[in-house]
Length: 77
Image 1 (cartoon, rainbow, N blue to C red):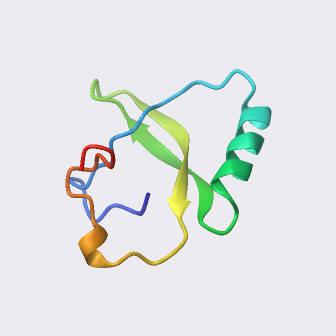
Image 2: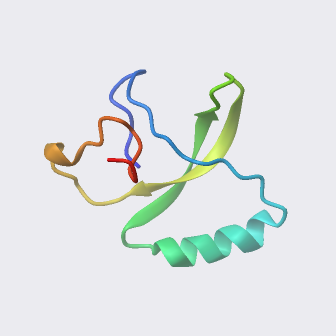
């Protein structure tokens, strides 16, 4: 993920409630790796308009402009 350019710049994803956040995030942090992603707390808004604070992994490396996923849905692009 990268920071949005504007309000129309959305990212599609999944939101999970973690039963053991410390343990789960420790495993996810190891999987995502410290060199490529960093975990940050951001606002996640559901289609219903309900908002939550959620951990997301932000890509650390610069990305060329042509790599922008206009739909916000990485797997569907």
